[in-house]
Structures are given as structure tokens and as C-alpha cells.
Image (tube, rainbow, N blue to C red; front, side, top):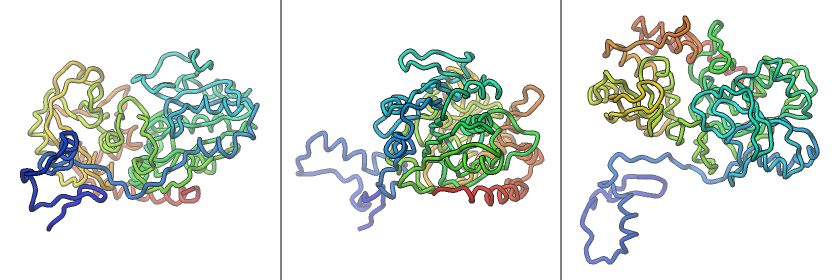
Length: 434
């Protein structure tokens, strides 16, 4: 008997695959559920592995259990969004108030307090009547204004689910708050949460001079930095700001190689276009395509899992990308019509990208995909606006684009950024918690 593993403790007998069931009375509901596990009914289906089942406790939960009594009656400024919940999905602002803290102001990062805004909200602040708090938009606050607003607070609590990527703006929001608090007596309390991409290690170029931007290229790190936000705060506090009263409340039962689904925590989409954990993993490998004239599926049901353009024939692209030798991904030809963003209302040909598990280099995957599309499609263009190439600020360097334009393989680009990775890794290791 030959068993092929489908998941932990699950297998099927290949010699008996798809045989008809005879003389066995099976309730219809059980039969339908069983079909989900039959190889003949789900060829190519995949599941992220689960290697352990011990729930990770967030910094929020540990803070409430161990430290909240010390802050009873204190005036707190809360930096958060919809991801700031506990295991039972109770909001941090409600939990902190129930523990006796006075939330005097709230600050929201990109996508707003409730995480539904696809574009930056143009308002400087809004009054949230349900939560009875004024919420300021971090994207519109100057350093002087943020420092002024934080002034009356006795402590600032930072509680946001990060993605572990420099271009994902939440780590830049952490830097912004730390810069504003430098030299003040106000304590910054970072409630730690898992890094969903920690299993990928570090990857990509260290942020180079000349490619700083306030939100997508602000944090001084490699593109994938393998730090939780608590560790990122410790690293930045030790290497770039001289006087911030920092306290990190760590996770419990956490290992940095854990996939997010192994933490047993609920996946709260950190932004509108990352609805599932699988889409967030694929996002790390295709986000660089936001710097070219392809749609990345914004405005569809599969953001960052669909890529394409009106001038692409799906089967050709699927064959092209399937031939790149990317073992962690599969490509299915699709048509899609975005409702907003690039090519809104137009039919695009492209591929649906499936993540099949395992660790990979997001930079290598994006480099090879873009290189292949660039060579095959004359209508390919780098996104050039405001006198600069957008992809350079996503990558934190112009080497990604320039090496590709010169026709160099990924190995040459990787060699040119390796020393920056090594320097960063030596620094970050001093500030790890897990």
C-alpha cells in the first residue's frame, strides 16, 4: 500500500484511488465532506502545514495579564488599527479602557482605523463617535505636529499587525512614532505580534541612500527583515535614535520560523488587499510588479494573486512563468477585470499565482518574473512618475531595475547586495527576542 501525504496524519491509498463505493451506507453529508479529501476530486489542492498546535499569546494579551494594573488611570495615546485585537477579536481600545487606562488620542496608519480604505484618507483627523476618540491620520502628520499631539500622553501604546516587509508602511509608522518621541519622557510600549514572513529570513537590498521615502522606504533594513515589530523597535532604538523610553511586551510560545497559521491566532487582513495569509505570502513575491505597468489584481477578488494586463494572452504568460523553475509557485491562466486601480474596467489577461509551500526568496521570484515579462512583451514599461522610477523606492535601490535592464541574471544582483545584507544581519541579531 502506497500512501501519499495530504497533510498532517492524512493520506490516500493510490491503489484504491477513485474506486466506487459499494455496499456501504454513508450519510450524504459525510460523503460530501469525504470528497474534499479525495485526490481525484482535488488534484493540485494544497494546504499550509501545521507542525505544532500551541497558541501564541500576543503582546496585547501579555500586557493586559501582567502589566495593565501599572497603567491604570494613565493618559494613553494608542497607535493602532483593526488588527489590534486579542484572540477573541476584542478590540484593544476597549480592553485597555476596561483595564482602567484613559485613551486620550488614537493614531491610525495607512488604510485607517478600520482597515477598509484602499487609498490614503485625505482627512487629518476624524472623530470616532462609537469609540469616543479622535483619530489622527499618521500619513498627514509632520514630525512637529505628531510630537505636539503626543505631548500630553503619559505613554504611547503601539499595537499593529505588521507584514515583515520594508515597503509595507506599518514599520515606517513605527519609525515615525519613535522619531517623534526621541528625547521626550513619554514611554513607548510596543505590543508585539508575529511576523507572517519570518520563515523567509532576510532578503533584498538594504535601503540605500537616495531611495528614502516617508512611507514605503523609510525603515533602515533589508527588504525582508525577519524582525517582529517589537524587535524592529529594539533594533531601531539602538541604532538610529538615541533616547526613546522603549518597552517591548513580547509574545509567548513564539518561534520565528512559525507560519502564521501555526500560531492559532485569527488572520485579520492587515490591509484590504491581503484577505488571506496565502495572498500575503504571494504579495511578498509580486509587490515589485507595482513598479511596472501590470495590474497586480487590486480591485479583484484575488489581489496580488492575479497579475496581468490587457495586452497579455493568459496561456502564453502561464507557460512563460511555469518555465522559470520556481518550485514554490504554480501559474494558472486567467482573465480578470479590476474595478479600480490599474486598468480599472478593462479585461486583463494574466495568471493566478498559487503558493505551494516552502521558503523562497521574494526578490528572486519577482526578479525572474519581471525579467521574463520584460523580455517577452514589448509593451512592458517601468512605472516612471515624478521624475523617478517607482520600483526603485519599493526595492530601496536602483540596482534591481538597472541589473534587469542590462540583462544580468538574478545571481549578479544578489551578489551586489550581499554585503549590505550581512551588515544588517549582524546588527539585527543583537536585538532578537525569539
